[in-house]
Image 1: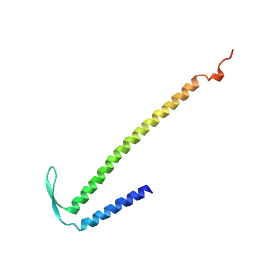
Image 2: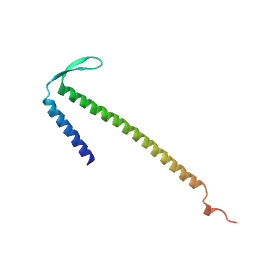
Image 3: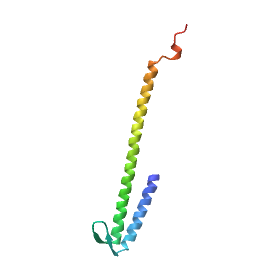
Image 4: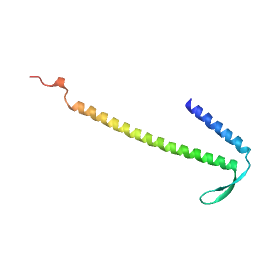
Length: 101
């Protein structure tokens, strides 16, 4: 349900930007580090929005991947420690089996 709401929000933003973009035919000069170009403002806004969206998903994906790797390492360590405790419990005799005098 949460993902459906997020998808609908992004869809509404996209539809609004397309609607506003069709009514903006003004040409602007865009200066970037290497060169300069003249673009329609609607094309420029759409491309920058798309680039920001992709960049945001890439950054979030990297953080998600980092957390998943850390979780996998922690689960591996936990499993190893559980195996070690089972081995040490089987080697050491329990107090009820000790020899009584």
